[in-house]
Length: 393
Image 1 (cartoon, one colour):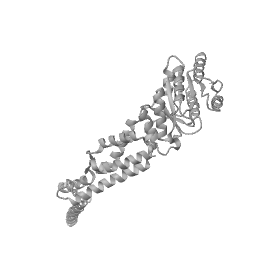
Image 2 (image 1 turned 45 degrees about the horizontal axis):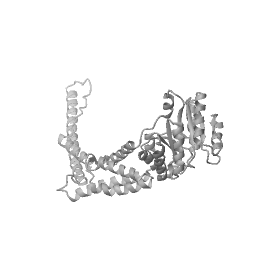
Image 3 (image 1 turned 30 degrees about the vertical axis):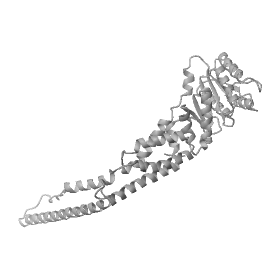
Image 4 (image 1 turned 180 degrees about the vertical axis):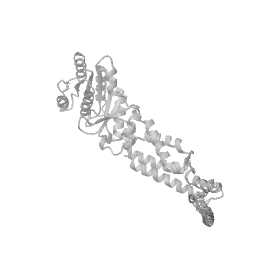
């Protein structure tokens, strides 16, 4: 998702290293970092010469020893004696002079462990490009500014190893994302832990986001965990909305409470709660009418549904691919009914990832689930580490 960002990060760190080395070459006397490439060549020549000297001395000693062994054998034969066993070959071990070893280590340290400090000016150049890339990936402006500010705090003025600078900045970026994203609520566990059943969940969002299908997916997920539920068709305005929810109910073998079109949606929710209590069901899932977040009268109506049904959990459903529009929708619903969590649909075709990163931060509410297809099983509990992995950082 953030492939361009990763490429830009790599390019930036490579340019930083090249610039630092070039400056060191130009300012040999004033720079704290000695010119690496020149010193390496010189030290390598010195090391090679010393190694040749050691090898030469070793060869001389071995030849001398061989002559002594041959002489001993001849003397033994001349005296009519014999040797019980041939003389053992003496292996002469030679160690590199300590001076040579330390020189090599010194050169290696300059190559491997040299450090770089990123200045404010250098970061500013990168941050302008970073801001543009984040915005292009549907990251909200306030989240973009937060990321850049945090990244600056983590890397500017800090000594970073040259060989690890790219990974250091990458890790810092990942850590910022972990801080921005909230940990999800475990919905099945919350339902099971509530003593007085049913557990009531109200779903909201605009038309066309896959809201009704997502409700069916949640019902199936809960059913697999042994949690019984009833569906409330409180969307009494959109044509075919009741039939759609009933169709899902029949396929899943889950009862649906519905009234006629045009009836008060709050009364549908109320009846669904009574049905759940009577039949000792664990949960009530309320489908509300999809409405534009700019329509104030309709937003007041969903406030009424929430007031009557008194939900334990209010979940906003939006599309990952709509970017900043989904963020604005979530903000408005949060203002009206104080949502508790978020489901993002079509995340399997979202190539940017910025909506998921932004919507939770803007509302200060966790992402609970990601919709990944049309099948009932195509929904997954949100996982921060999996999300970061998908970003490609």
